Length: 246
Image 1 (cartoon, rainbow, N blue to C red):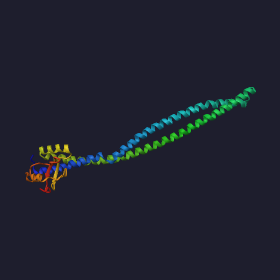
Image 2: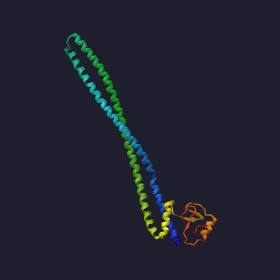
Image 3: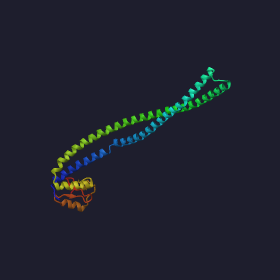
Image 4: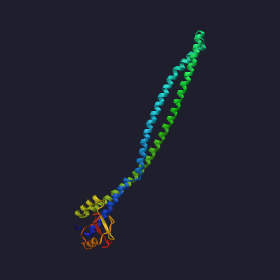
């Protein structure tokens, strides 16, 4: 393939733009904020599961507390009625009175047992409610952290995108100025190897950094200026410069 030396040199300008664009894309994909956001989102998911469990625990204890209160209330009412009959002298004969007094004592013991159970549920509910509140505070703090990282990410992405758009505009202006066949070869090589052209500097291909052997150097030195050279190692287009060492 033949191409004017000036076009070959401009190919290096195109490669520089493409390299810069690729670097921007890599930077965009590997922003440190992305890893932080992913980590915090995993923490957020785990915390959401904890919140569900905490809500369930509180709900179950609230149900248990209502049940304990429901169990306790009729026993209290019965003891109150019996005590009023005893105090009012309407319990009946002495035998009935003794039976009612024993019943009141039994009810008092039952109430004490039920109140202990109720207190245990109330304490558990207080603890569970506090734990749920703490989870809520953690969730809020996580959301604030995520918002900070997302804002930083968005700012950096916007800057990268703006810089990238400028480089793409430059590329779109430069590429059509190159011979179609040279550009097609360059694009094919770039797609296959990540870059399509490299300078020959101090007898080294700047793409693979391998020094050319004596035979290749001699052949390149004798080649016409408009001949498109290729690196034997990496296949990139080799562009001769004043620093090639030929």
